Length: 232
Image (cartoon, rainbow, N blue to C red; front, side):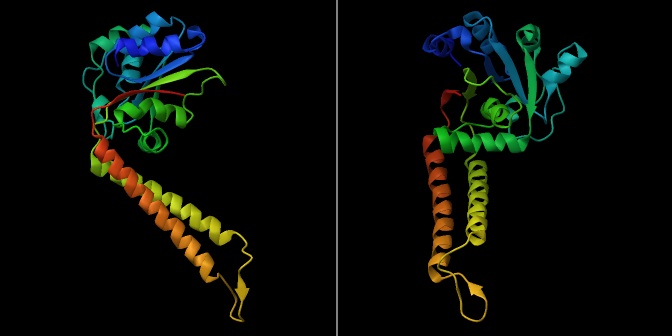
């Protein structure tokens, strides 16, 4: 992330010292150095996938793990060892949290559906920590999470969007089927939904599927060359 982006964040705040936390994936130390220089009191939270908690383990051991036997993770851009630079600047890091694969997937889909940002898994780690509640900022105070990199396989994104659409459709079906309907009737063979009710359910499911397809096409069209700072 360019230093001037951090400067833009700082000057856009009524009181830059009110910035409580900055969440970032572990990849060198440039973000932490720049953030502490601009806002000395900011809390730096390093976020890693739980499949590769190399920084957390390095801090526990007191030495950098230059290699690490990471388990499979979507966040392969930050998997493995942390490197000497990150470890040398460990005093700038206030906390280290890890997030699950499910939490990473949720953040990727949320960035696309709510912010129209295509992000790779490594770039969505900070938001995953926020959405999962692993990092709970003080109410009403600004928090920044760095979202960088859009190098995500279209097939992976399609899978995540399809799973979200299926989940939403299932919830809609459950809600509609359990809710009372004025147009239900009993023809002697037990209560049954009217044709209008059935058409409503089918239509909502179809809309969910179409929305997933549109989001997928949007993601493919956007490409992978993007770097965005999202403010929460």
